[in-house]
Image 1 (tube, helix red, strand yellow):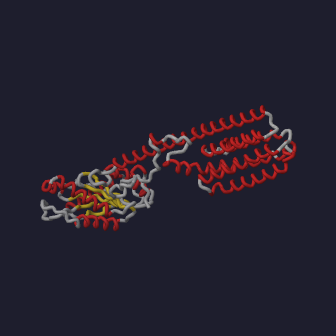
Image 2 (cartoon, rainbow, N blue to C red):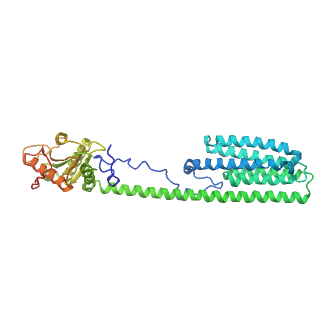
Image 3 (cartoon, rainbow, N blue to C red):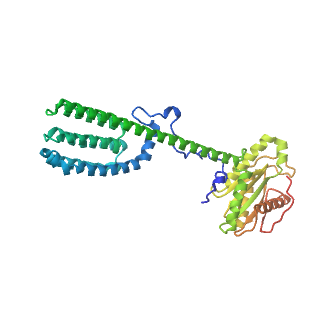
Length: 428
């Protein structure tokens, strides 16, 4: 299948412009009035699914690395459990092994879960992980047992800052951990009032700081994503506009076919391929017979209708994706036939002339007695390894068209070879 250069994409199919040509576009970015994040940092509905699709691989990769690091650091406390709180050291090791197994399951299932399921699983796992040091703090009566409260706070930090739980999940985690932590601190009998106050203040300040940092980081990240999305959509829109203008600049407004500029863009590429030996092609120059007389008799509006009918017939005859149909100017058309030899080019040109005659468009003003619209055509064939220039090919086709006019119109002229035979242009 022939691949059209981007500079003339859309003008070379020989068909009317497809109204769906630009439908394959990126999902729209949110409008100005919809681009604000909600209070929980949620995206607008039309952006949320796209964000998840684009961020999912990186999110899963980040979480898996963080979980592996968390497993190592979480179990490193086993080494000092017998010194810090020997009375519950064995329980600590068992509970941490249970959490490690849970973390391994989360690590395994992360790529297989939906976004909501993934974040809820992370929230549940982190609440379970936080419950272990809090339980040890409540259960131990060792002199240094209060140090396990630090483990509790560090586990919260890991969930909020390292795993970067989504902000709604971070709120839930902090609320549960704050309530549970305050309860344990309040009802541990051997703690002095000063110690309870200090631990409560530490927990409260840590909760506030972590929630604030989570909100700031995620808001910044999501705002940056929205800005990038708007810029992407803007660039996409500019590219669509550029392509649309290129289409319009190479499309004939009357017939919807390619125009002279389209032909001037395509022909050098085809000649380059022919010179390199990749393919032959033929150029068919077509002229509507006695079109001035048609306009004089029926009016220019009827003449435009006639040209549109002829253009539609030529477009329907062309092979989509390979041939090029263009309005050369006035009542002249050009058809480029790709990859055809001389006999095939001659036969297809004959078929083109016959197809226009078969339209049976009335033309009572012809001086030759014919009472329908016909066309004459001249064919220039370009072989592999040609040395012809663009002007030579057009001149050959024009000379062949002149021969067809002299022979009586409504027919094709000879398929000319490499020798250039230039004659005066035919008069209609």
